[in-house]
View (cartoon, rainbow, N blue to C red):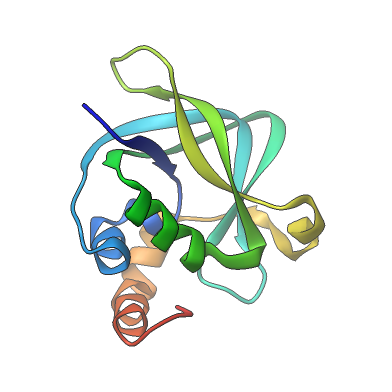
Length: 139
């Protein structure tokens, strides 16, 4: 087992989005991240993650990311986010470290006050989002 692990909590949770961005498929498992919340980003269909005591976010853990995939994701995420290392809890496994994209402290003012819902995103925006990714950023 090589490469990096990535905790995805928003649009990257969708394997189709990860494949559109990286050109690859990765092993996945459900996981959660404590001490954070996933909020809407004002004027966008994607979320942002920020630290908050007592918060907990469910997501998808991708394993085996190489440097090329990480560089592509870094470019995609842009200035709103910074890649950090956090401790996540995969379902049925020991906790482990993983990469995650957090909203930078300077950009937190762009976060809304409501939780982002992946089911709503899938039903209302996923098809259009994927179409935009295929034609280049931004989604």
